[in-house]
Image 1 (cartoon, one colour):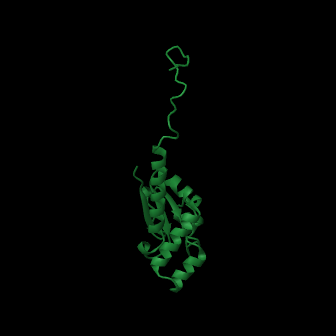
Image 2: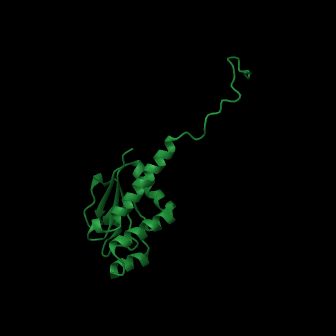
Image 3: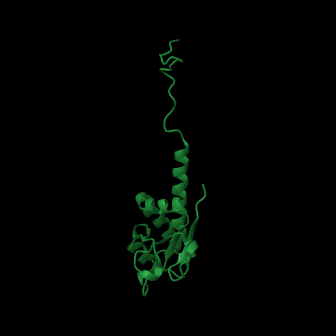
Amino acid sequence: MSYDIALKRIYAEPDASDGARILVDRLWPRGMPRERLELTDWYRDASPSLALSRQLRRGDISSAVFAVRYRGELRDAPHNLLPLMRHARRGKLTLLSAMRNLEESHLPLLRQMILGALQQEDAEDALPSSPPCYLGLLDRNGKQEHD
C-alpha cells in the first residue's frame, strides 16, 4: 500500500490538502498562535530527545551521527510511531517542524521510519496467522473422516 507523508515548515500557510497536520518538534515554535496552525495534534514523543538535538545544534555530533542515534531512539520506542502510523493509514499526513531546512531536520528520518514500520506491518498482515491444520477433517455429513 502507498502512503502519503509530506514534510512542511510550521510557518507555511495551512492548506486543505495537508490532511492530518502533526507538529513533531519537542518545543513549541516561537510566535505561533495555536489557532493559526490548524494542527491535528502536537506529538513530541516522535521528535529527537532534547540531549540529541542539543548535541547536533552545538556541533558536538555530525548529521550522520545524529541520524544513527535518532533512528536508535525511534527503534528503542517503536510505540512512539503508532499515532503517526494511524494518521498515515487514514489519508495524507503532513509532518510539521519549525526547522529552517527540512531536508536536514529530523523529519525525513521520521518519515522513513514511519514508512518502514507501515510496510513491515503490512507484510506481517499479509502472512497467514497460523498454518492450516488438516487433522480432524469433517466429511459432508459433519462427521470426522478416518483414514
